[in-house]
Length: 328
Image (cartoon, rainbow, N blue to C red; front, side, top):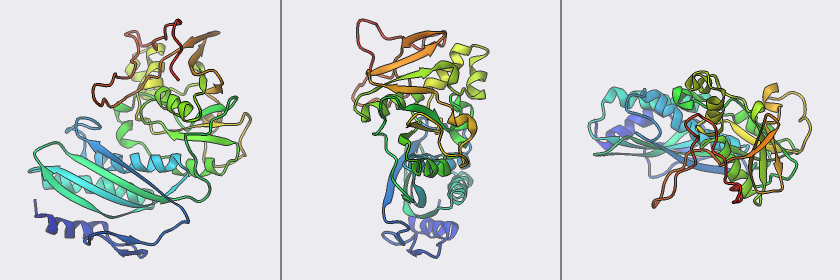
């Protein structure tokens, strides 16, 4: 691998400098034109053996780290503008894999019409770590997790579950959908589904004052990958849709009733998958029954924190002991 300065010059040529970048890659910091009155910023890493494996194609790893950040911007109703990329490469990381990684980053940025304008590079005796900071702007208001109201219906922009069969590397962030939802006064709250539908829904409800929700089992859009992993078990496929994570679709709550016609949302995404209720907790409505359930999903453990609830061996969500209140 070339030394850091030579590699930085190589990256500057590779990513280029768009016209509205006054100072790009190669200086201590980038200087760019602000494209909106309000900037939206987020930062997300991917770590080998956590978010991907060494066997995964590096171009898809680069694509994933960009799109994870763009999905966060989409959940806020923002349009992406600039990216900062930090590469922590394993010592001796092959040049062809490095090029493929950068190709994936550039391809995802071009698809979203944003640009890499800086970052940093380092090597160490550890796994590959790629961190992207994304900067965007708001065409209108900012969507937030807080804001869901009792009686709101709940919706998602796409199918859920089974992401580890490849979707977690190939998803496309719902940027146009996020901007469209932010322009809808009836939409009250939104967020990116990254850790699992139920866990992220619980997060939204907690941010909205500790509300609860009922989820319609028959209305949850289950992906083909989740069904494939379930090997014919409808209960296991549903459990995957509820808790697998890394779906990177948008979850939102809105006042009951249809949104305006047109726009980028498919008809299926407009169908409610549940509703917000005043009583804290989560319930699954299935076969005429209302079952309390735990928020399935992925949680990073810090300081020995308990892992998120996982489904039973038969694939059905675990139920909450009726003697204790369901989690909110």
